[in-house]
Length: 385
Image 1 (cartoon, rainbow, N blue to C red):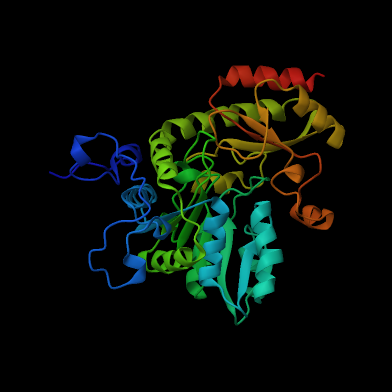
Image 2: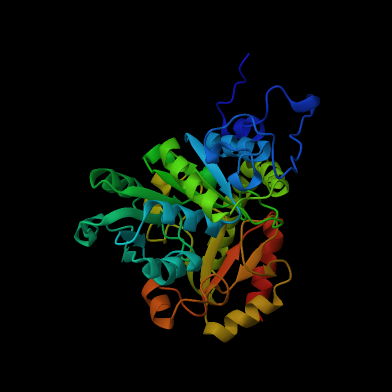
């Protein structure tokens, strides 16, 4: 009898598990074997081998990831950047052109502005919230459009339905980095995106103890990306697959708490006299708030803000916090705080940062699972110093 798995919470627990369970094990064991017995495969990509991402740990995890986003299939990779780079190198080649959201993760920005041009691939940056401006940026060699569901670090929410429709109309492959939103808050396939990417290092794993990536989408595209990944070698270790699968099981309860906590904290900061600006799509003051309400089931666990006093004040503030850890990354059970210009976006020039709207004193705060009241008290105390 088939399992009833209508709810995403149920799919997070049960999707992708081997049937019947291996030796009756409730939890899928770790297949720490680099190679598997040859059974007559005719295609190189069908051989069973860790680097080909087709051990039982890889394939079960891929089924779960596809199930929670309502997509056909998925691929896990050694990092979020491996997922991004492998995808772009699959859909783009020498002489091609990419449309990319103007404010994106610094690693992505560095890839498209530094590495892709060496291969003859050009990029034009667009405002994802201004559909009327996109067509003018098209070229005969434009092949794909790349955006983030909630942008890093200014928490912008573009016109995502319009982006997916624009891509379909003009024969482009639509790619979205869904890391900040997670499948709990947004499922790209539902609005027509071809490929959804994740840094699983963040929310999907949720415990700051592995680095991983994922590519989710239509089977024909994922097959193409898989072949590229098999040649580049960015495979995820089976033990990391096991940890990611374990982390995913609590994703819904973690993200919903972080949604609620982040909104309360953003409202508190917005009212504080020392805070000059708060960037969080759950706030009515955010420029994309109405669009975020229409598109998202929650606003995520990351917010950014600026305080009076600029860089020096931001450094002092971060230095006296006692609960959030000053560190790169986000999405874990512990709160993390950083200045993006020093961690996620340090490779961008001052001109590029200014164009993206990222101030030197901008503070990015990833809300963990601590008591919201304790985090608010810590933030208020640090703002008083």
